[in-house]
Amino acid sequence: MNGIFITFEGPDGSGKTTQLKKIAQELQKLGHDVLVTREPGGTAISDKIRSIILDPVNGEMVDQAEVLLYAASRAQHVHERILPALKAGRIVLCDRFIDASVAYQSYGLGVDIEMVKNISKYASSGLQATRTYMMDVPVEVSLERLNQRAGATEFTQQLDRIEQKNVEYHSRVRAGFHQIAADHPERVIMIDANRDVERIAADIWQDCKQLLEEHISV
Ligand code: TMP
Image 1 (spheres, rainbow, N blue to C red):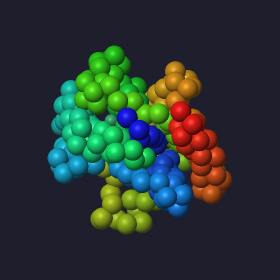
Image 2: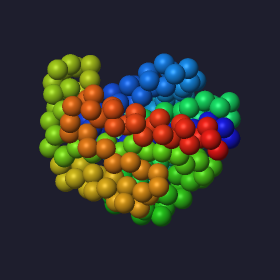
Image 3: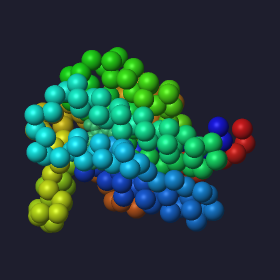
Image 4: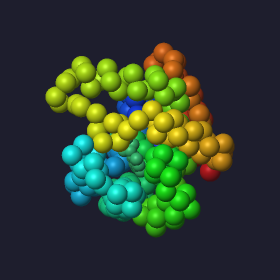
């Protein structure tokens, strides 16, 4: 497999999507073939699953269904889009991946962590990111940003089913992301995302350039 698989993780409202787009632009400027994608989603089937998962009307969804729907979306995404792109030598930038299931479904909801990891492993056929940029912001900051976003666009972008959960839930998710970063220092780079957007982008880009050099020299 010749491509590089890079994921962006972090709480809702941490600015990871903005950063992902900036890195994609930098890579494209250098002539790299980049696939920008996201989870849940990234294929027609996965996007349908995404709308079921996030629809605020589905408040009665049980934890088991939530875990399996994220995994189903991932399975389709990995096999239909990510693996073929990596095989073709492309750089894949993915907005969320398995770490999100561990943080949100295990640390957030309390689903057994080994179960979530095993289901995710099955869904992804063992694919893991080469590098993960984990955007970290205090929970109050991320929730404030989400509320502003929802308020600014009123009907078009109200908070989804996951974003609507309480502060305690989001605090557990953030703690989960910290634990994942501590468990995988070789892969995960923790980024202080409570700073100026350009400074954050500069830090990520510096690491990303180094990653590319290492990849080319292998
Ligand atoms: P997004 O807002 O970054 O597009 O992600 C959608 C929501 O789904 C977000 O609240 C995080 C959540 N999520 C999980 O709970 N588990 C997962 O495995 C993934 C990929 C996302």
